[in-house]
Amino acid sequence: MSLLGVLDRIADKPTFDKAIEPVRKAVAALPQAVKDLLHGTWLGHPLHPVLAQVPVGSWVSAGILDVIPATRPAATLLIGTGVAAAVPTAMSGAADWSEQEVGVRRLGAVHAVANTAALGLYVGSLVARSKGAGTWGRVLAYSGLGLASGSAAIGGHMSYSLSSGASHSATAARSLTPEWIDLGPLDDLPDNKPTLRTGEGQGAPVPLAVVRRGARVDAFIGSCSHLGGPLPEGTIEQVRGSDCLVCPWHGSAFELDEGQPRRGPAANAQEKLEVRYVAGRVEARLAGRHTEG
Image (cartoon, rainbow, N blue to C red; front, top):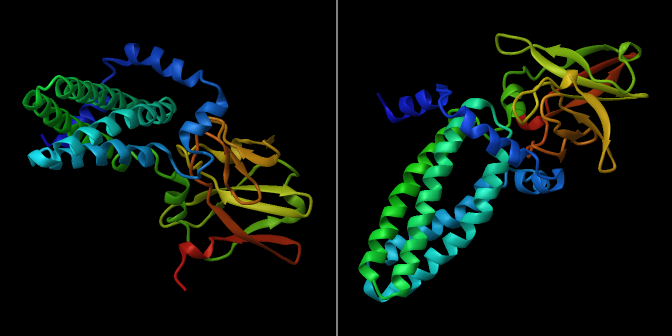
């Protein structure tokens, strides 16, 4: 069985769910403002992969510098930088992990345990180096690098194979044809309430979430960018001073004007369609970035 097959087996097993759930609930209980900071909602991009570059880059660079005796003091500095950066990186990862689907949470727990062990090895390396045990310090550091590299492979599988952190809205948008979609008469759309409409997709209809506010209509891909929740079943709320479309699954809120996230766990914007009005009817189509000129 391939490595990916082994990881998928882990994602399918409920063995450690009872141990994982209290941790998930504790992280999910953090104040919303703290979680939004850690999710990267304010950035419009998941924060965890941005922060992860620091410990990964520092530790890989340290591994190279440790080969040369003259550059080993610099390697020690880089190891310390990676250790310090690992803390906020882990916090942002935990925030994302707490609001993922169950298979991702299972793999994420393995990812976290491996990263914690790698961090412990690097801390041990710093202690050994401070006591003059350079050889032992390098052994611990290279062991930590090997463990962190394996953990990074798990993180990659979560991101690419299980779509953790990917925009489910953008994925759905790729299935939608670029032609104008008839959403029906303006007067048939309820005011200030999400309405389900569909567009022609590549083999299957693509759900859309349509919101009318008086004479204005905003149309979005109906799958929430976070985990594909059904936005047409959501609500319209004021969130941080903006009218937002709120997902019924995890409470992510997207500005109606631009689709930008105003409240997490979503960090990616919600894909929005262009809208026009023709003889009392409303039509929408994908934005130009999804179509060839």
